Length: 316
Image (tube, rainbow, N blue to C red):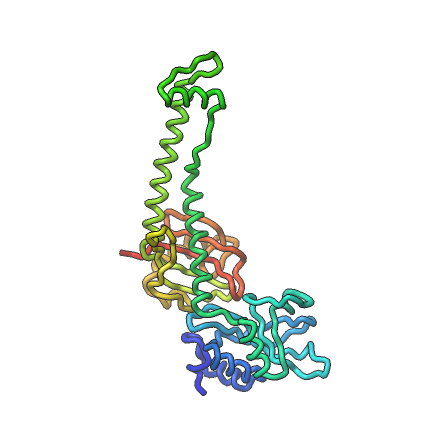
């Protein structure tokens, strides 16, 4: 057994490894690594269902996306025997006293808990976890589009005016006082429609530049750890859009471990140093910052599992 086997790369520490091996939770972590290749990210704490606090270990796939926490729960057994426990937000039992209880599986035997995890497909795959993160690119696209303005065409004509326009379109003249066309209004509405078309093309070009060419996707969790990967969107012949991995996610303690993004991240740090809500150096907000050529977004406040995100085009 070695530290390389059980710990995520860049998170290997001999002292923490010794703590892990001495932990009563180690038999569970050993089997989770053997069956699912889950790696230890860091020691942490967890609140138990009965209001206690236990030592826990945050585990994730090789790409550093956190999956769940392994720990010994000494608060729920009727015979005072500690139980091996695994909690993940990516699974929920049908019944339980609370959300925490529904997200947790326990057993006094490691083998029984591993069997239960397997039977209920509790551990999401590396591929599914990566896909879950990259699906959020769509949120970034929507923010860019929304901030560029609305290109919706709104019908501003009354039914009588529409009647008149239909007659004219068919080569016939309006034939009454109430079925007539105000040409000035037609020009105003036409100008609005032309502007909407121009903006639609501009949005499409910006989306192509930012998302259908290689871009950096940078996420920060509540620890200040970074998930960094390089991706691009592709469109199939049937119009389906998918996210292609160029450099899959990896977890880093600091963005400075990825030299290519250091200049931009330094500018982000300076630009948002006064922002109230931040994770790492990223602001926790929905915004397309044209001066930095980056879009920031989030779905929830950063946690062990959720991130604040930034997308920016890769340098050519």
